[in-house]
Amino acid sequence: MKINRNDNRIDTTLGELIAAISEAAFEYSDDTKEAYNLARLALVEILKSASPRSKSIDWRFPVTKYLH
Image 1 (spheres, rainbow, N blue to C red):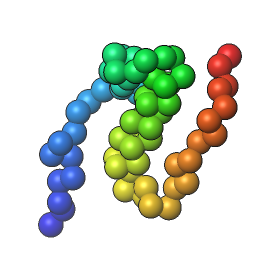
Image 2 (image 1 turned 180 degrees about the horizontal axis):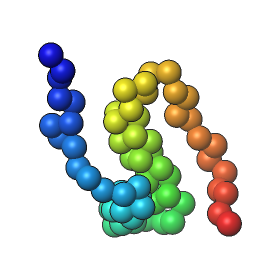
Image 3 (image 1 turned 180 degrees about the vertical axis):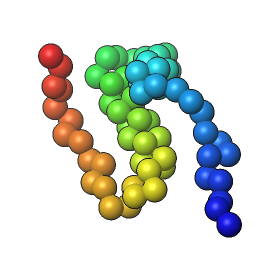
Image 4 (image 1 turned 45 degrees about the vertical axis):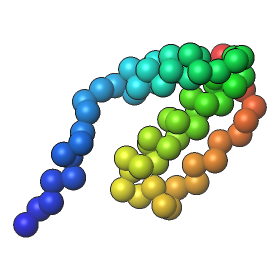
């Protein structure tokens, strides 16, 4: 018997997910740096919980900005 793990699945692109998270972060933050950090933390938590191997992945990212 195969268990369906996709009961709560939402089909979206990574770009749409980042845009939605960023929009919410900027609404609740006082400055740009805080908004980017909040968006980063939210995205990491979402992706971590979506990955079946999330416990074996190091999800810490450097705080420095890599804007190109």
